[in-house]
Length: 589
Image (cartoon, rainbow, N blue to C red; front, side, top):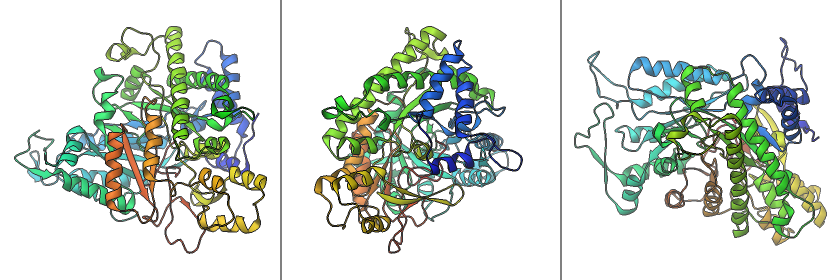
């Protein structure tokens, strides 16, 4: 059985292990895994067999579920999902009811996403009072204040995503509402766009601004370029807003008969219907590397990967049945579609172990091979579960009509910020943020993270030294450090050294085999231009991505990930932070 390293144990004690009245942990990490595996296996007839299977795959750090499952499984408050979308309608009573429900979701460790596009614009009339509407931005601020009062399941502050579609009359106010750093710290924000908008960005033209209360434009238009310019400038300045391509999201909606999706979870990787929730989990790719073999195909243990994929899919499906649902609407929609999201972590570490540079065609080939294999095995398992336990109730409204299928979706790639620390691997599909950096988690506690892979390679090649350790602590990367072999520099290139187009290529390679979406930050060097950000957004849409988050080095002064150098005035971050990928403020995974 794999053991948790010292930093992982500290995180477990702070966030996940059961505590007594004095706040002292009363279970060990192994106890926690037993608690979780026993709860998950209770949904199966052969409980003993599956309890051992679930325990072994987690104890070996080959698979971990999202944080609420680790913290809450087997407890009376057993709300086990990480991702929720709640509707926001255009009435004061309903808006504050949604705010209350979001607070209760946060209390159990979940994160919430909302589309505010139905809320009438600022200055519009309110017939019941004769007054003027305050607009969606004012309500987002109110939601943010409410979130401040609730800490997620005792684990972290609440996480939210606010979405506003490009045609809303208040779109420019929305885009710029996080211009001041630290404002709306509990929210990520994203602009929802579609093919019509992107066509007008590329070819020129105006967009009509639609009042959601009336469904009419009243002749109001704005150049599409004006909205896009505001978006790219704001993202260049501080990482937000992100962009969500709802044409791509809904084109591959597996349950189109249940309506279009209009919002996502806080990190953007999980588009969901109103009142829908989803369970996520991640396979640790470094667990499937063999010592011997020529090329990556021979060095990957495909048999073990297939076995663990099947085990993880069953685990996530069982969570739907043992879950304690906060509201009947959430239970109804969630059980109607039974969406799960199995993803990966440790991709960067796997590339390093295999000697493959992140920015290479071989990395793209590996990404497609891995995720294509995982998705195929996940679909096969879901079909088998459909025969064993029955298909999801809304299957006749889905692309699987006439077939047996247990789950409407089976794959998602989450940021895995905390989970990757527990597993001792790199986060999600991100490149290494740095070879040595500081991460602040757990209410300001700091962890010094150093790449074990680099240390092993440097010792093996004979250039490891205490001077190198000190330089890495201040610089984070091999840039400007002499005496490093060129092949090592290529394999250990860090997030801000990798060209943005290669970040997008890697995300697109994974997205081809992901039902839901991919959490990924596109990192830009400090000297990047607004035009380069603009080009990245267009390339992302042309590449079929469902959304994009960018972060320019040094554009924020307060971030979770940072280097130790005194001469770096700005901290930097990537999708590994405890919020969203940079731009992010909170992350429930």
